Image (cartoon, rainbow, N blue to C red; front, side, top):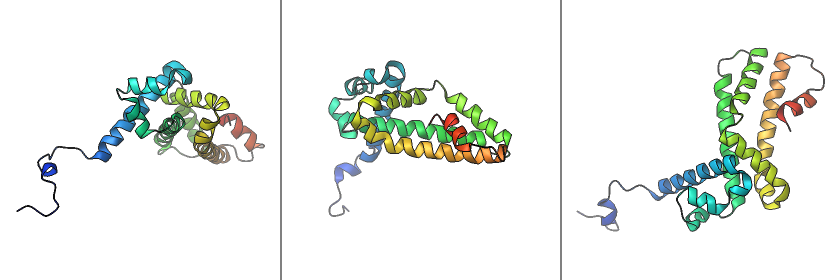
Amino acid sequence: MEMAGADPMRAAQPGRRRQVDRSAETRERVIAAALELLHRHGYQGASTIAIARRAQLSQGALQHQFPTKALLMNAVLRRSVALRYQTYRRALAGVPRGLPRFRALSEASWSLIGSDEISASREIELAMRNDPELAEAVAPTFRRHSAFVQRLIGRMLDDAFPGLPNKAGVIRLLNNA
């Protein structure tokens, strides 16, 4: 018995994925393509046309997901920040407070140098200087990340070096903020 309002075509396609899943997959392809192009060719080489081509999408499909390049770059930056947080969490799990924890964080940070995500975030950071729309789009993400890292390093400095003078200056140097 067929229910009123049920779509018989939808019921006949049990393997069909939901639109939200297809959209998420498309977003992932776009972000991955942007990361790669930013890492290999810099901000100028990561045009939306090049990103769409690399992601094997039409320009319209890319713009449906990310109406502006600035919004796409913020998504890329958020991916970079998420990678850092995951890396820090794994590196610090179970490590005792004090110098061992500070060392584990330093090693985790070094392990990220040269990754596509870190290269991409540096390219975005440099491009912000000449692109006000980009600067506005990514500024909140940069501020949140900087504040997080400063708090994290501040706590570690308190644990590792009680009474250290000028913690704020040390944090700025370590965080490059």
